[in-house]
Image 1 (cartoon, rainbow, N blue to C red):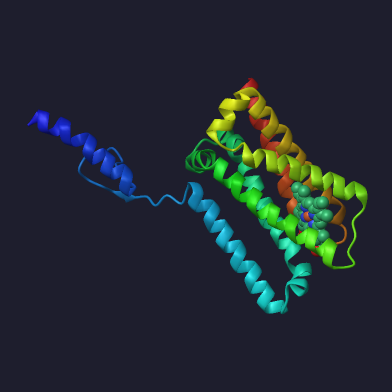
Image 2 (image 1 turned 120 degrees about the vertical axis):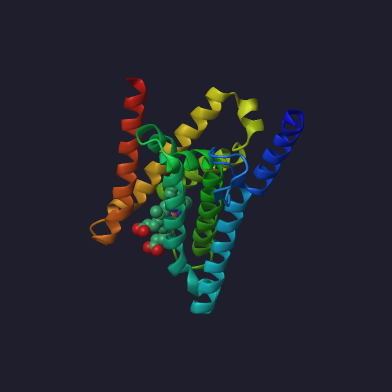
Length: 226
Ligand code: HEM
């Protein structure tokens, strides 16, 4: 009997892992929770579908691609910001307030980051077509500063896999992602802080969240150093 149990247990565990059924440790045969895992590539795909629905819906409402451009550039940047901040604060929140949310965010940070890259490259596409197809212009410093953020974002996205971590070495990989994410944070702040007086109080939301996120990272860094 014991031998039979020993042979069957791994098979049951594998089945539970495959079906997403989690054993909470109370009793081997009792299943209390069913966990759906909206993780990995599914998450990036869901964000892509949401974005496509939003853009197609907007085109329908405004009647044309050019017509929708003024109304969609900001929302794509806001969605990108929400995803960016989720990835940017994942480890700090887990260090400061360990729990289910922090564990989930840490585990899925790579895919949250890739979803951010997807949305923010769509923002770039919209911004570029606005520059090419309309009278809109941007100064050279704005284009250079924003462009460099996209260089970092592209490098971070293509190195968001285990093979790149091995190839670059953990130290260089971490350096790239740290410098890149602080630079992107800086551009978010540089874009939104000057807008605060023009769109008070809503315009203060992104800068406020950005500075709280920075505070969390500093507090987590200090906690680790103690
Ligand atoms: C060459 C690069 C870029 C250009 C030319 C550009 C241009 C624009 C334009 C035209 C808007 C819409 C403004 C409006 O509707 O009044 C916008 C919004 C925004 N962009 Fe970009 N963008 C660039 C890159 C970036 C980057 C790299 C970031 C962040 C890392 C960013 C963050 C934002 C944010 C947060 C908003 C919303 C601002 C608000 O709500 O006040 N942009 N951008």
